[in-house]
Amino acid sequence: MVLSRRTLLKLGVLGGALAVMPLAPSIATYTADRPAPSPQIPRFVRPLAVPPVLRPVRSTATTDYYEVTQREAQVEILPGLPTTIWGYNGLFPGPTFRVRSGRTIVVRHTNLLPDGVVVHQHGGVTPPESDGYPTDLIPPGGSGAYVYPNQHRAATLWYHDHAMDRTGFHIYMGLAGFYIVEDEGEDRLSLPKGAYDVPLLLQDRRFAADGSLVFAPLGHIAVDGDVLLVNGVPWPRLEVANRKYRFRVLNGSNSTTFRLALGSGQPLTVIGTDGGLLPAPVQTPEIRLAMAERVEIVVDFSAYPIGSQVVLENRDGEGQLGQIMRFDVVRQEADDSEVPQTLRAMEQLSEAMAVRTREFVFGPRPTLNANPPVEMVINGQEFDPNRIDARPRLGDVEIWRLKGATLLGLGGRQSHPVHIHLVSFQILDRDGARPAPYEAGWKDTVVVPFDQEVRVIMRFDGYRGKYIMHCHNLEHEDMAMMTNFEVV
Ligand code: C2O
Ligand code: CU
Ligand code: CU
Image (cartoon, protein in one colour):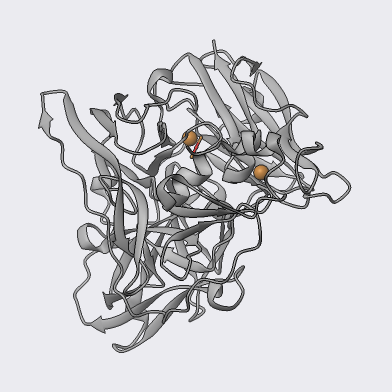
């Protein structure tokens, strides 16, 4: 049986005596110690894989029906070594959904895994019963259906597991994939399309010598890998033509933040954020991308002679973690795509529209059951599925002040990528300063550093019901850093 994080915490196991705990039929190692380095492998050898787009099993005039089986599978991530993963349809990452805005889909999930699962469409405007509430589990051997009306402008969303206390482990094992919404407004633009529109899921992982995954939450503070995967391939290379490409970049790591830049020094052209296209493209030398955040960029490889190699770097990573993947410019091609100066109109939410301001403090509080002796909470309280901490009214605009906090430096100097379900928000300011221009679009996740206050503004549109807000450092989330709000 897989023990829950909170159970482990209560038993005093994490960071404590039990060094290595094998999980259900030794699929992976769960360790409380700092683990050994992964096997060394060469970089920029294997080609980038792009997850297949899932097709519906049947369609009616209004609705497309999909089926997904969650199961264990063996895949080759490190050369010549088998890795057991948990995958949607046995894939790591899962298949990509590409759906039309306004068209409903129904996804039936069958759970062949040894643990209860629940699926959340991250960034979606989803009725509460299909939002993947952490305790709405599909038991092993069971199945369940999710209805997604897709009342969402075009955007790069994703779907992933959201099981209470175990989201971190489940996503680490592979339960995540892209969910891309398209619409006519975006169709009309001549942005790079088809093979030139490439999703990139960034994740770090750690492996044992036999290729199995090693899950080391280090006292549930963070999970750090030493191998960088893009779409499940370690440090891949992508052969590109000398033209423009659109990349939809998702940080699907448990606890790792990236600072993206091109090794050539060419600036990145940002066209979209979590919630889709920005009003206008923004040039920036680098992009900070925390867990669960998405950024859409266009890179024009016509700036390079054929034969050039351009590395996508992570300026926050040391050693081999400083490099993510490599683009090899290998061929000449005509390019009729363009990045228009106006991408999409965006309603700017103003402070004057807000009817209420709420405050949430994200930080550690003392506990005797952990090492270090702190747990991560919101407003000093552990998550309780039965306690509602905010009741915004449907249609209201509110400002939420999200504050980081520390506790005498104990496990405290971490930032918290705060994610709010159901709504898209705009960032008003960070400690009074305007957000970076590339963050000035619709967001559903925002980094709250331990020493800052971030104000976000949003309209509670969509559905009434119970939803959650939580830190997307999955170790913090699984610990207790989650809260309920109910739209009334
Ligand atoms: Cu990406 Cu509540 O999750
Ligand atoms: Cu979400
Ligand atoms: Cu956190």
